[in-house]
Length: 113
Length: 115
Image 1 (cartoon, rainbow over the protein chains, first blue to last red):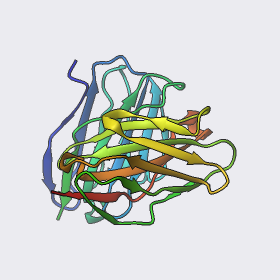
Image 2 (cartoon, one colour; image 1 turned 180 degrees about the horizontal axis):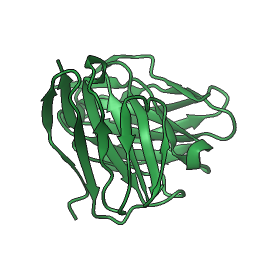
Image 3 (cartoon, chains in turn orange, brown; image 1 turned 120 degrees about the vertical axis):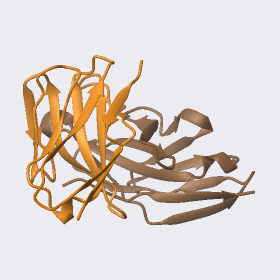
């Protein structure tokens, strides 16, 4: 199993540009989440999904969209990048509601200039 | 609202000595508590969890954590530190809302084990 994969590893955007961060998992996990990691702030939940076709907002959803058309994939879209979105983004998955161990991808480091 | 505090930004310990990384939490209801480790340029890796049962929880790589309800703490411990334990450690608490997907992470504690 590859586990949770994320692409790209690094990205530089100009303010106002859009892009999609890709996340895929091959463990047939129902739950998937996107977090951002900023220095001194831990991880904050952006959006999450509890199954194909079901998504909801986390703590910091503004400026981001998600969709979940398949169990495997959970892309994160930045509609109009802002410097405040400079961060490291992590995708995570877990099997279902009663299994609490999250499996994290390697992260995407995004810089918005 | 749930919250997690990790009062130390940095913990330094000599190799072979015991280590403790502190975590306190605030949660309504029963706490679901977790520890994760992050090595440089990597994603987080699960170490251990407390859901219910024994207050001393054993996890990966020789780590354990002690749940103390009266002090609302969940400190991470290891009897003998290794240089390879040097990493960033995160404590997290889960609340039951949002399909149980609200995991609140602390700010992290950087552990340095000195040879």
